[in-house]
Image (cartoon, rainbow, N blue to C red; front, side, top):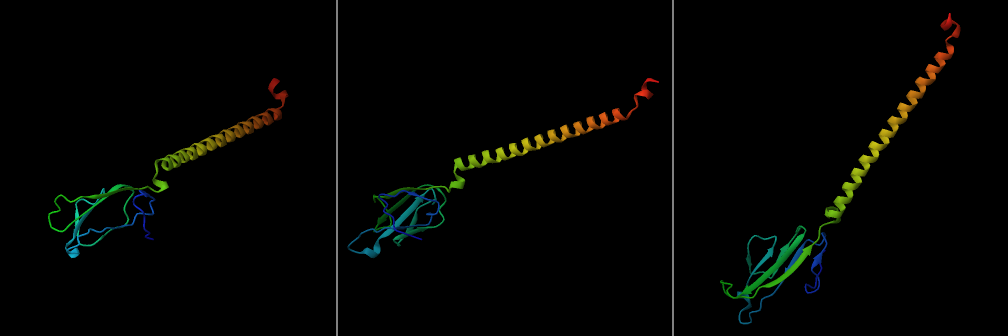
Length: 152
């Protein structure tokens, strides 16, 4: 899924575009085989990586902001050599964005609130039905009692 990107225009990538290959070249016309490179991906690499290859490969780079730096030289010192930089950002997937986490949290709390509210309403209805049942049983019992026994 690697595709060339014009680094002068594109500096934002999705979380799926996290495998990167940087292709660079240092020119030394008298003896091209002596060209050495060093590169570093700030925010990912801890120190400079020295190589004779013209490619730097990174896979599964986590979301974040990075600066790729590369320089070349024909000697071992890398003194006074210009450094080429490319700054870019790999964005988080939507499910790790703050707004999505907030939305899911709010949804979860609303579900708990709805559950508790419905349970409370059901318990109130059951209590009311129980009270009405007891009252109707009491009324039935009262009507069965002969008033004659009460006043004799």
